[in-house]
Amino acid sequence: MDLHDLTRQLHISGTSKIVMVVADGLGGLPREPGGQTELEAASTPHLDDLAARGILGSSLPILPGISPGSGPGHLALFGYDPLQYVIGRGALEATGIGFELEDGDVAIRCNFCTLDADGNISDRRAGRIPTEESAPLAVRLREVKVPGVEIFVEPVREHRFVVVLRAAGRLAGQVRDTDPQATGVPPLEPVADDPASERTAEIAREFLRQARQLLADQPKANFHTMRGFAEKPQLPSYREVYGLRAAAIAVYPMYKGLARLVGMDIVGEAQTLNDQMDVLKASWNDYDFFFLHYKYTDSTGEDGNFEAKVQRIEELDAAMPRIHALNPEVLIVTGDHSTPAYLKSHSWHPVPTLLASDCCRPDPETRFAESACIRGGLGLFQAKYLMSLALANAGRLGKYGA
Image (cartoon, rainbow, N blue to C red; front, side, top):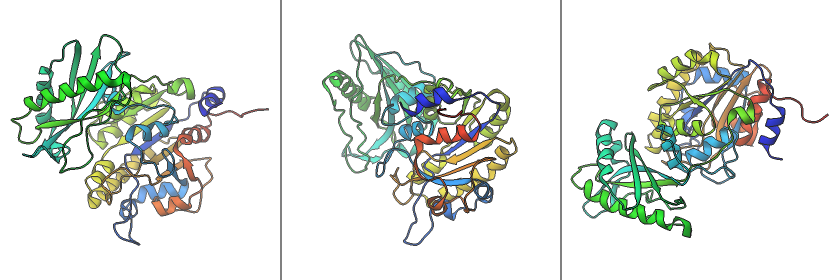
């Protein structure tokens, strides 16, 4: 029996509300021995007040030493074992923009990049090209034609776009990324990891060949990489496994896509954190569970900008009173993974986690920071158990056994 078998049996209806705030890439590292992390350096009076009333801990998105992608990290927070439910980033991105994947499709999340005169990557994100410049380039790539293949190219946001491949017979998605995760080297070739995916890899190679020609005149986005080749996933819904009407309030399409795949409704058209708070208030009476995603703690970490990440954490803290004013029975603040500015990448470090409710067992900690979370009452735990803790604190889980 797995955890979802239990929650299916034990969940009970109620009127309590759960809010899960996910500050993407929240966890950090000191810049020098004995220094502070980004979260420790930030001024967070509202989060600290919440910490004093709640319980802290450190969550492991996957397993010790494993650095998670955003998809597995969020799946774990939603209570889905990321080693059992594997979703490629392409499927998340496509679903996030409302593209209806069919069985047999392969979706690919693509990033515009900049190649130098030698064909090496000089910028993996094409200077984070703005959407108004990148969208027409994605549309241009609709000119790519591969016999026997239906190709969909959809702009997403900034340097990101989606390619969906559809052909007679089922395509498979076990194809390696072409992003080398480094600059000064050429893009990688798409390589199939199993015989069933060879055709997908061949189509991708031809797409890339034509795309390089179509983008050759561009000063910044003169090529692109392909990441997260993925087929359409099948996941049980939040209503099925938890009995919850769930809503997602996110800005970036990928996170909307992940939420949609687990049966959450995408509510509002928020573009800023303030917009998200407006949507939360407006939707309050219609849902039991709210997932609120905050991206910028991750992007600043990936840029290696310690000070900017501190500022983004402080912006999130300033918004917390608007959530508290709604009086949710359970309020969780955490991240899907750590993205230390020191490393400029996702990392394996446990993620600071805060849970506040009227029936939690508060620990002595009064600051929301990595050092306090290490000492917190939740201890070091796997993120996939966070939802059962949320349900229990919300009075939405019955007793197991006689």
